[in-house]
Length: 202
Image (cartoon, rainbow, N blue to C red):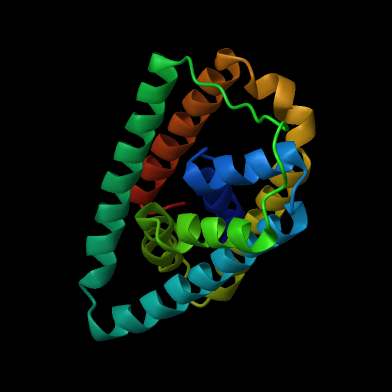
């Protein structure tokens, strides 16, 4: 259960940041276009990458014992930078996200092609799911499946909540102040995880 909860926490901490992928999911939810397909595609893609990271990292660690410490401290550095960017975005403020419905619906194929590019061609997605989650999973020897399950559940829960809760969030994210609070929260989460990873307990 400890590994599962750690996977949930880290998975949510990494995925909650509003990047290109999440902004697109939120936009589709606001437009109510292909919501199920978009949320399911993102969640399944995340699950595949998480499994790849956790299983692949375990195999790589056996062949190269130095890989664990290297990726651990690399993950700490990544999280510190990630958190700093979030704090800078909060300091700058002024961001909004709105969606206009004065347009014809976009075909499902084009929507899926767009979200596929934002998911599989995004280096941050690979760093989060394959590298970072794979590195942290090494902190739970013999419990990597539970850790991966927690991260996957967090991913499914987040994407479906974001996609289907977008309508309720529309008035909130039309205000720049909401983005300041969100970015600041993400920064705190990222630095907190970095500190725990550095001291060997996530």
